Image (cartoon, rainbow, N blue to C red; front, side, top):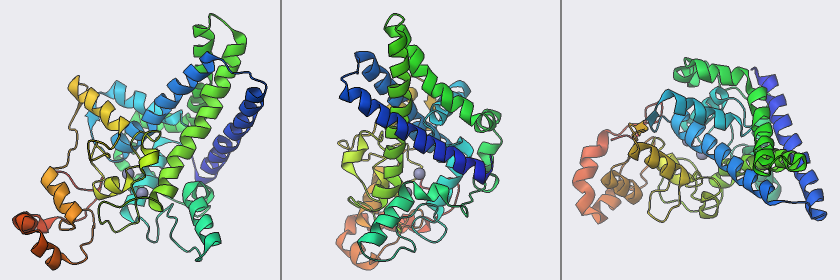
Length: 339
Ligand SMILES: [Zn+2]
Ligand SMILES: [Zn+2]
């Protein structure tokens, strides 16, 4: 799939679900909404959400854990059904984003080349949200950014059969609704609308909000060289992706929610897979290292330390660890930070 085809796909995957949302609003206005619509919406939202968060992002892009091939293919397929393009291009863009986050070359920073003021802010946020996907100059060659993934035949197949698999993701909820209602054709059709188009609209804007809102509004726990933020209210519907400052501080960590109260559904899924023997090599961050990073002492993935001397003085108990960590260097892929 070349750049032009990718832009057309993203356009279709943005406009058609929007039309679906308008149709669903018309149905709601006429009080046409059944329990099966809600069921397939929730199920398909979960499938495609885990597909993007656990599959595309943590498993493929950052190699946060390993799993058996059928599960790997299933998660990647679920990601394709979200309608965000092929896994190879998604991963390439995202690895590029981490390498130069909020600096020149970042595919979707809301901070670059936008004039100050309200209009510039909104233009930047729109660019980071969805606009960047229509940039004709946008290139993130999978051969350069994710040669490891290009070598995987199932991922190449999914990339080549993108439209088919995405469309299947819209037919599937229709079949499911048809089945669970005992053969109602109407439920099948509205199931395709709610579990297909409306669900794609919701999951896509949730993911895109991590790129836009997650680099603009929210709290910063870790001092990273980018503008990433933790956005608590987005954490549940984004399956934990919205702990985005945590993620930029420790890109390979399988957990993005670093505190017990930071809801991270993807981390729970990976933990469940590990506990049942279906996942291994799950990347965890040493708590000491996390503590140092929070204090601004450690340097990981290019993290800056504004005033190390002062921080070391005030954090004497961490000083020996800081000495040990001086060799931390930002290398690539897939972005360091492993014990
Ligand atoms: Zn980011
Ligand atoms: Zn990432």
